[in-house]
Image (tube, rainbow, N blue to C red; front, side, top):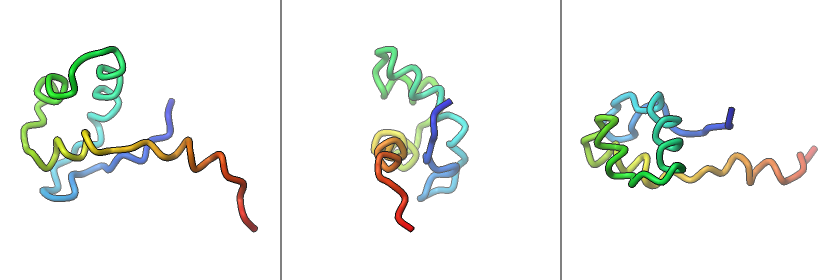
Length: 69
């Protein structure tokens, strides 16, 4: 299981979208076009689509740095 910092709700409209993230990323990694995947998942609003398309996984990069005490 991956460490996900994807938001549970859309920042703009408040629609719950967090439960769709793992399916979205799995299908995009398999080579499907992101727009088609979002259409299939029922993500129609521009603000919600923006959440998926602009998200950057940073958890793995942050974990490379040692903990400062």
